[in-house]
Length: 345
Image: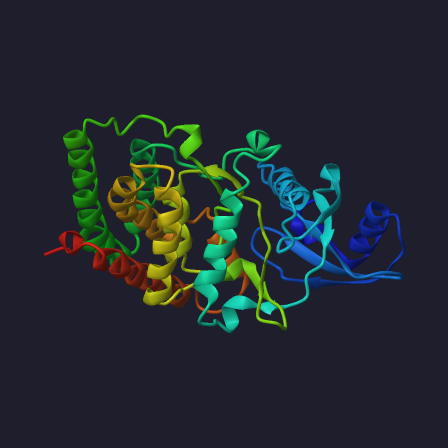
């Protein structure tokens, strides 16, 4: 079943079957590029969330359902409790969270709430079942893997940039030169310390990561507390990637002070058990940041889902592409501000 085929009638039928109870009504809610969620009004009891996943060859349902099951078993209440799933229909049933999109009304303590959740998550690294969790989507366990992912994404956008002079100017004049400096610095620092940048990070130093985490995937309840949704990418990852991704994720758009506070709090947590964390953070931050710039620019790839989503929203696609390029430029500036050596001269 593809996403456009999911109707309200389908949601009522599947929701009733999975819950074992009568569904009084269903309405689409929180639509996104990768899934569709329905709010199910039950004849009895609280509402439930029915989530329909795309059949794109990746087990998004399994990854999210396993992650949320693990978190629920270990007492995490700020994420939805799983209820039932039907992989054949690409659907799963979850606890419904009321609340407004957190990103629409940011608050001063958002960075601390994000940090609190992630720090609490690391306390479950040795919990029962943690060893069975998958790697996070696009996980990276060595500096060379990070460089390879950057270069792979760059290759695709280089081809696309042939038809977009402004994109090509940004990449060739800013992003590529600064990232080349960052990669040279990384390899030089590792050589000075006698470390192998291709060596995989020890399992004991890996982090549990939602991977795609921030205010864009959070709801704010009436008491101001955040509830977190969308764990399709959850799993094991390098904690440096977790810290960097959360601090600079364009979906959260954290102010500089909040991002720095989040980095500091998470860094203290990971430094306590890993003497090399600070070294990896300093040399990998600009590489992970460059990867995020390329992710933002995915809309320039003709085959990308994000481009199709933009086109489906209507309006002038050229204007929308320019908006993403401007977002990538601002993100790149944020990255370079932490290391003046990266600023192209």
